[in-house]
Amino acid sequence: MARYDLLVKGGMLVLPYVGTVRADLATRDGRIAAIGADLDPADAAEVLDANARLVFPGAVDAHYHLGIYRSLAEDAAEETRSSLVGGATTVLSYFRTGQHYLNRTGAYADIFPEVLAAVDGRAYTDYGFHLAPMDTAQVGEVPTLVGEHGVSSFKYYMFYKGFNLSADSRDAKSFTMSDEYDLGHLYQIMEAVAAANGPDRRVSLSLHCEQSELMRLFIDRVRAAGDPQTLKAYSDARPPLTERVAIGEATTLAGATGCPVNLLHLSSADALDAARAARAALPGADIRAEVTLHHLCLSYDALTGLGGKVNPPIRTVADTEALWAGVLDGSVDWVASDHACCTEEHKGDALWPALPGFGGTALLYPLLISEGMHKRGLSPARIAELASANPARAYGLWGRKGNLVVGADADLAIVDPDLEREVTTDLLLSGQDHCPFEGRKVRGWPVATVVRGHVAYRDGAVTGEPQGMYVTR
Ligand SMILES: [Zn+2]
Image 1: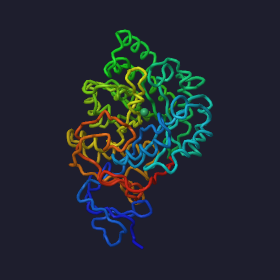
Image 2: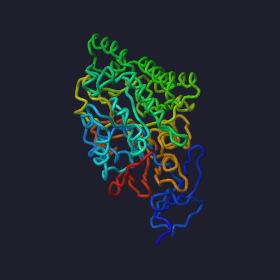
Image 3: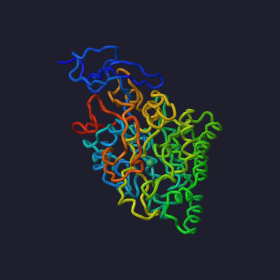
Image 4: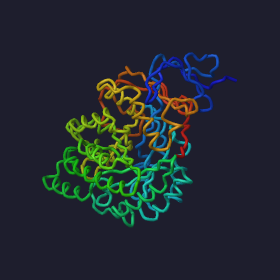
């Protein structure tokens, strides 16, 4: 029997917080078993020639929406397949009760096992879930979800107290199916999440920051002005000021409760400013910041149609550059896709009822390398931190995911930094039939993605059956 299952020979290993080193890497039983200058191919059952390409730790795509518009089973199969294209080997998906998803409410004690059963055996990547306590009874489930189900992150949506998901209805109560969904509810969630933290365990609350009372005014104004059906109108209707105010509210409560928070998908210069200001005002608080690929790389004036409708909206070029500056100066902790498979049929041809979101997981490493490394000088190690190590640390995966060290899961993205491809829907292997990044030339793609020692994707095609497993955190 061979000493190793897989040997990755001749690669440049990208070590977060350290740098890039030329070394071989061998795996056994799904974990990294050896790293060395010259490991013997005769010791391995399978050899993958990395040929001086970059070997990244598999990305942890920390913002994802399995099952939001289609079944969990279908999304698990088709969307995690797309993740392999972008070098993601773990996805952390948001789930909540209420409209969309399973379209009902109830106890997570009943519903969460059903979610896990629907995904089981179908995912190509490892996966975990962030859960949103939507009503008071679910807040009471936080200790059990942490202790028994390995869920160490939760979510609150600041604008659901006033609007539904597409912002075409203010009947928020039938959308959330909740008893109370206000700042009082948020405060209770933060108390419960703060209490679940231990010396070795970060339990956190993720926040979608848009302020619904201001949205009401600006949406009414934009619609009264003649209802222009553009992404610019959508941004005007939920402007960066709504993010700034929501971040102020959320971080004030985080400071008061001691709850670790993640400010999700900051979309604008204003939002990033507000996050920096909150950190400065609350030096003891644990406040982490996320940006998405689309807020970094898309602006509304370069897009036509409604495929790019998303919450928070796509902004201006100046906003994208402010977010890149935050990535470069370290204000931003990680980059995620906020992947939600949303077809053209889901979008329709009217701005307000169009469902928000779209896929992007297949572009996680490619866009960071193309736009971050080639165009803006981000180092490979820093890219590994943004895509893998930092989300792994924030969400209870550090030690297993996010790094190339002996003993960690053998999750790898082997990237050719000079491979250039134009984005097409075919290339991305997702169930989504359009893509706001379509036509963009991107330089730097995974040529192989390895999930726990199995080569799951190679040269543009998935290899083998889904092997993804649920990760407790
Ligand atoms: Zn999202």
